[in-house]
Length: 296
Image (cartoon, rainbow, N blue to C red):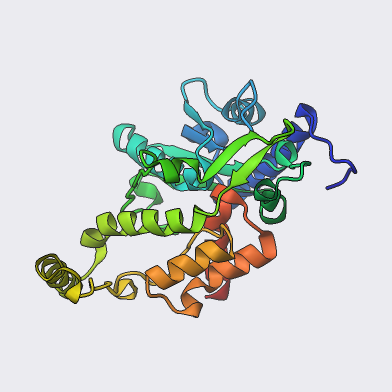
């Protein structure tokens, strides 16, 4: 924070977002040697800062993107919005051929510094930090050789129908009318529950046949014999080389490490990202991927 008390006006929030997004995109275009006017799809996500004009319109204006671009601005979707944006971009690339999709994930701290005394809302001041990432996707065959990765699967699991899940992270006013983001004690439980549901959907797509059979047998046994047989937890390390678990907080990482049967080295990228950058919300997984790439 550069000001005490902190500036929380719209101009300061917009300046923060511009600094993050513009510098990130300038670096991306320089590294990829892609002309901004070749971008056909744009998806920008920021959970708690959604001004008018939108952040996606801000990017179009700054980099003079073409007039027929498919532009989307995702708001209020929390820390998972970065992967949701990738999923949206993937679906759009199935429809629009030979083009680029640009995904920008960021979060704004300026407008969400909590100045009250509610402990559940003060936690966000300690955890969250500004950050951003830009990801360029292509469905053009010519880009196959120079692409870093191939997007194989995206699996989305929505648990918002459950009240506990819906209310675990909520922007609201405290008893004195001060606005902030409230994190309930259910956050770690909800994170573990949601990841389990997501893994159940993802597992059939990536696990080897041997692990699928073991899980199937244990599931049948557990159903027949009730609690006498413990449900088998598949060894996901047989299908996944690296794990980028959202750096939401130490408690969240601990729960997921335990539930997935991972070792400390499997969550090293998450813990290191949290320690160095804090919780950068939807962009955190890309910081973790950069850590893994740098480590080799």
